[in-house]
Structures are given as structure tokens and as C-alpha cells.
Image (cartoon, rainbow, N blue to C red; front, top):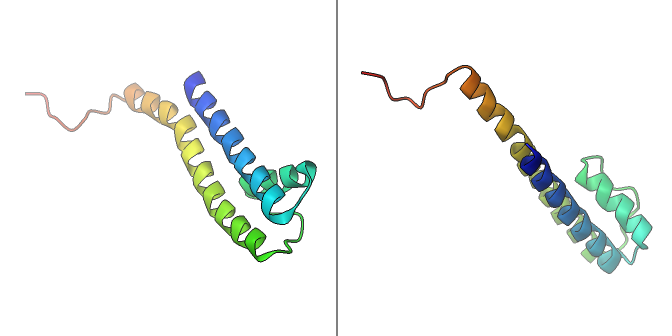
Length: 99
């Protein structure tokens, strides 16, 4: 479980850094503004600041799609060991019948 949480945390940090760099480069935001916008999109809440450049808008759209995938993948990392344990608890077999 700690490994799964560690993977979730690492994936979140990498996603946050990508967003911060993108907002800083494409929109010229300060690190604080880039952080809050990246964190809000990564958490599924949406951007805070108005986007002014075409490149910034394209980045924001692409980053939102990326963030949605990160959330799904990170949730899978955390829930997979729990689901696996539940299957073992109920003795779910692999499909092969005992003869």
C-alpha cells in the first residue's frame, strides 16, 4: 500500500511541476500563480486566472486532458492493492475449475 501511495504522490508531483512550468512559460505567470492554476486543474477544479495567449490556451487544454488521465491512473495505483485484497478475501478464483 505504501508503494501505491508513493507512486500516486510521485505522479502528482510530476504533474504539478509540468503544469507550473507550462503556465510560467506560456502565460508568463509567477510561480505562485502557476502553482495555483496547475493545482486547481490537477485536482479537477479548473483554472483560476484568465488565459491571455493562444499558446497558453492550447497548453491549458492539453494539461487538463493530461490531468484527467493522471487522476484516473493515480486512483488505479491506490485502489488496485485494495481491490486485490478484497478478491483474495472472497476467494475469487482465476476461472480455472478444481477437478
